[in-house]
Image (tube, rainbow, N blue to C red; front, side, top):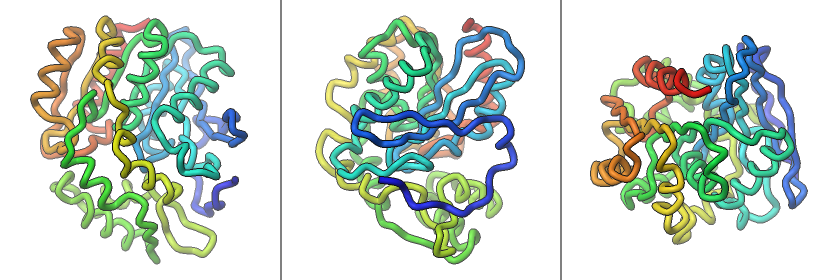
Length: 300
């Protein structure tokens, strides 16, 4: 099933990547951005995995930056961005997304990589490690851990899948501010506009709407689907892997206690708290970018 065609303009940095696709086992055409390394250093590639309601545009700035020296692959999960919508909402679950990514890894012949995962993408990273931990050379987890706070899940359940649309980008930005203002209390209108253009597209009817299948909300609200059980076991598969945990100071999805437990189980983990930000940091913050660069500099 093809997703509705968006008519929004292409991003300014489009020349840095190629739009490519791969196929899922159930016949969906899934899209990814392939950023070739502008300087061929032979460095390991980076996979960027987005959050529940996000898409490949979420990593546009980071991918452009990292692709100076590394190939960067940024998939749209099924039901998001330029990927097909699934005929059944039952497949909108992290384990299915991981199966889809496994097929992409196999098709590209990538046997070792660095994973950057925001929220749901971080859960996917842990599940990928549980399957084959030897493939993952380094990890950035963005505001997510093996234990997820119920308050954060309840908040997300309150807005995901509502299908709202807006007549202008300013209306869309102001709506984002109403929903997520507590997480980004210092954001100005231009920053909300930037976020809106990451999350949304201009649809064929001319209105601005979220760039995902509203049906992703159905399995998310069911027990065990926001995050699979026993994620601590998956996290422990990364015990020897260099890791950066980026956490929003105002996050309601990952607690101090969970962070402390993660650090105890993985002494290789560095933690960076982003002040005055909730779920989730954009990874474009200067201090975050510098810390990611430092982590990757030590990885071949």
